[in-house]
Amino acid sequence: MPIIKGFQALVDEAMAQVTTHSVAQVQARLADPDVQIVDIRDPRELEREGTLPGALLAPRGMLEFWVDPASPYFKPVFADESKQFILFCGAGWRSALATKTLQDMGMTNVAHIDGDFAAWKKAEAPMVTLEQHKAESVARKVP
Image 1 (tube, one colour):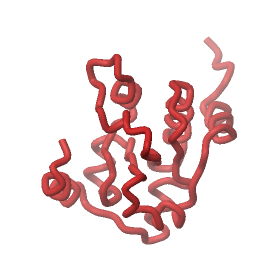
Image 2 (cartoon, one colour; image 1 turned 90 degrees about the vertical axis):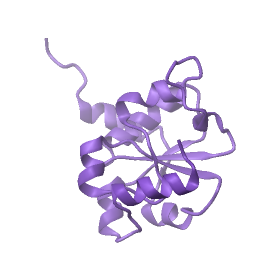
Image 3 (cartoon, one colour; image 1 turned 45 degrees about the vertical axis):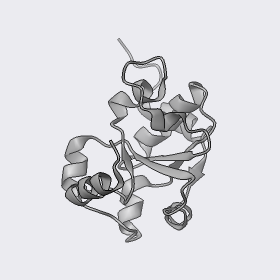
C-alpha cells in the first residue's frame, strides 16, 4: 500500500497550524506558573538525555488519553485552562504533530518549542537529569 501523505507533509501541515515558541521565549517563562512544559519524549530519551526543569513527562503514545476527561487515563493537570501547555520532543516533529492533535481535540492553550530538545541543548538552556527531575517532583508533590 503506497503512502499518499508522508510524515514530512504531516509535520509541515501541523507546523503551519500551531503556535511555535523559540527556546529563548520558553526559557524566559520557565518559572511562570501559567506555563506547563510538557516533555513527550519516550523513557529511553529521558533516561539518556534528561529533561527540562519542571517539565511534565507525558509520553507521546499516551498524550490524547491523558488529555481527554472521558479517558480512564485522564490527568487533571490538562484540564487547567489557565495554563499554556508547551510541548517538546527531540527535534520538533512529534511535538508539532502532538500540538496539532491537541488543537484538533479542542485545546487552544497549546504550543511547542522551535527545534525542541536539540535546540534547547544547543542553547545551553537549563536541563536536569531524570533522577533530578524525579527528586524535584517528589519535593513538589507531583503525582
